[in-house]
Length: 229
Image (cartoon, rainbow, N blue to C red):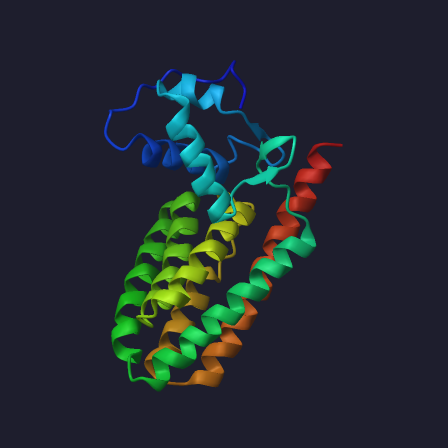
């Protein structure tokens, strides 16, 4: 984190660690802390006007979320994800979300789950209409989080929380160049097949959705590499 760009932002005394975690998480996801950046405890402590203890706790939380990595004898870094990492993240996501779809449909939770998912589809549509790509990305991930939450399984949700954090790391903030115009329709179709109890169709649509996401991320990374040449 560059001391030149750091802004002294004193936090309220309550729940320092949670607030530092949130600020650092946002900086990682929106790209202010780029992949490969090192996070040294003193800099956030000075930036946010807190002691080093809540910063250390915040870094431990982010390590558990997969948003930063601790390297022995070196420090804590924002990870640089390669194509294999991205594919592995989406492999894990597909396994967890497929299990969620099967459970929701087999336990007659389809209608209730679909009602909740529809809310995020409409919010995503509104965000696309005004070109708010950060909101599009947020509602996309909230849609999938709600899908897993609809199972009512604490363990499945616990496993999913790690992989969805790493997805945020993959995506960062969407831009118009990243946008897929069929994104809303893909989510709408997934929701419809869940509502109708069509397990095979829902899983097939989800698989295509994940494959399209990998292509989007690869395209973004290729553009980034070209820009840095």
